[in-house]
Amino acid sequence: MEVIDNRPWNRGPLDPGPIDREYFEAAAQGRLIIQKCEDCGNTQFPPKALCVSCGQVPDWIEASGRGQVYTFTVVRRHGVEPFSSLAPFVLAMIDIPEGARFMGNITGIDPETIQVGQNVEAYALRIDETLALPLWRPIEST
Ligand SMILES: [Zn+2]
Image (cartoon, rainbow, N blue to C red; front, side):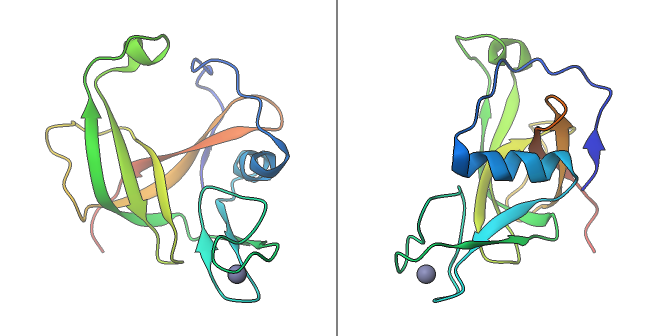
């Protein structure tokens, strides 16, 4: 997963808790990770303390970084900065082949042309030395 280092962070402070922090730290290293339960095989996102299927402590696995748009909405107006300056932007749910469904922004696309089933890939926007935020962008069909 590419990490974009030269774009100033403009989405406000991010102070993840102990469970989320691992996800953002991995992103800063160019890895998209999700939780997978070794006991029952469940994969989940967002990260949680326990497996939502069986209650065991999940492990982390690295995902390929590719996915498909499950559904999306276009946010055309937002009342709070910095998001009002980013509008219109795409907020999507993205299915990845490892079995989890992400929620995130798709950037670099005309919101009028996005389609369900479209192929996307993850990239990360650096926040600081240790954290980055995974985002999504369109890729050509393979
Ligand atoms: Zn489980």
